[in-house]
Image 1: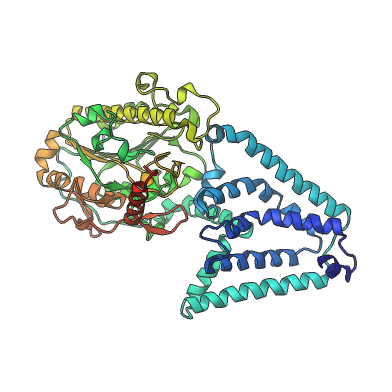
Image 2: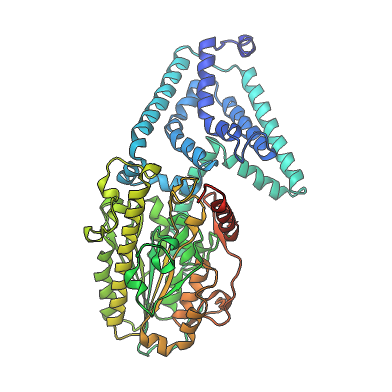
Length: 581
């Protein structure tokens, strides 16, 4: 039928060219087809799935209408064929198109980390990449050699059908949104954003637009003020407040929280330590979680940190000298969000210059911390330590002396984080890394004890980790499961602090069983630092007697807000089913 359609125009596409063109187009649209026909939330059998199908087919028609010679279109799309394995993998795992965060993370993936992450999947992934690009190049060659072109009538047909399809979606969304034009426009844009390749190109543009905003963040927020004031006299003995941001450490893996293995022997025997039993993260990716942890941004307003200062600015206004000591990488799109915020500190130190697989152990943070605590300068000091913690590959996160549970990943080679067969050595290596984190935190406490100033340590992980915990056989993070969200939240203070600010410490102790999240961190740290400002919300500070638990939300991997309680409840129900524990 298609051959007869094109035969009425000059010059026509012969049958072979037409088949190659259809094949290349189908290949390019395969992520959309997989979503529409895969039976997931975007199934064509549902109204949202049907809308999605109409959207990507209409966009395909519009693309075809732009090019008289199809080979030019497919040649321009050649880089997208190279990215197809990534998009298909994400669709298969998450039943959702890739997101801005995933695209940003992929752009700066450490080559060594990627190799270890893929493990045995590396060779198939490279073969798939070579095959897809090879097929695309050969198809372009065939279409070009045979002078295949789309006549004006065919292109007009594609243009009309594409515009008609998009118009239908706009009208449907207008009716759905109660004739709200802005709502219909946003919903249509969201449908388009989820498609491939048009939506993927838009996601790429969003990544670089985000980076453009970040590059000017310090100049943009320079005039912002919290109007913060220190409740204690500025010329007093001063305070040390240390915030340690953990990495990929989940609360259920700490013996402090009831885990069967003794993964926190030093912290667990410190009577001054207060461990919160029900703390959750606000995102399951570092690049989104950390900015929300150190600012007033939330899942409902994730871009707030782009327009106002973070904790570093708050403490600086109150007269604290500030430090950002990091064992994570500084460079790259994936880290640029955090780097931009960290640059507001008076002193910024990055120890990791060699990549994720050659990162110094977190003990490397101890000497610069000791210098920050002992060196001359303002009496009050706010110090942030960003650790590598339990970041994959876990085998690189602890020294030989902490190889307690075996066999670990150190006995394997060529493995993949997604291979359930390595569950035992994976969990052993993860627990060894947790044991080492216990050691590092205990050493930080020792440094605070040696300082003449009253001091506080606050530790919270950015997100958790999945370790093939149930029948879903999920590993790593960014899956938005309860294992991603349940994180440790620990408080420790020197005797001098607990005595001098007894009312504050009593609040910390009193609320240790309350449901809290990283949304409480900003206001709690302000309270611990004895800082007051007009935007302080006492109900969100666990150090305040006015604290009240509030509904918890997190920013999903898809970029939307979701209920933390819903995820925790769903995962508990799933685990309770026979065979899922």
